Length: 95
Picture 1 (tube, rainbow, N blue to C red):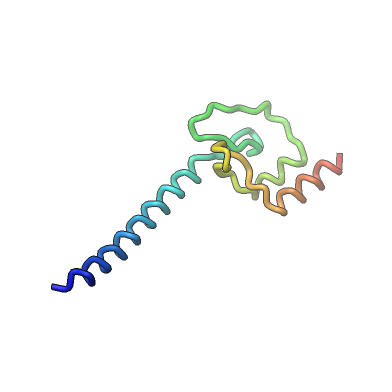
Picture 2: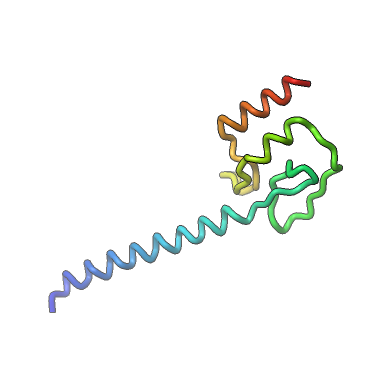
């Protein structure tokens, strides 16, 4: 039996399994943030009991297409894409 080939084969398979598991962990971590508030303006942990006062601001429309996800600091927040930033800027300028 060629042990070197066998070790290479299993090593490559284990890399695949490890990457797969890391991917699942990343998905689980990314999806534990949810939209909240009457207007969908809050991005928070699933376990949080955050409420809003149910008012409407023009900038809240920007969050309808924004991505709510875990941030590098570990907290949930909106992904600061150029589109979101521009939408918020325009909405706040219209006040």
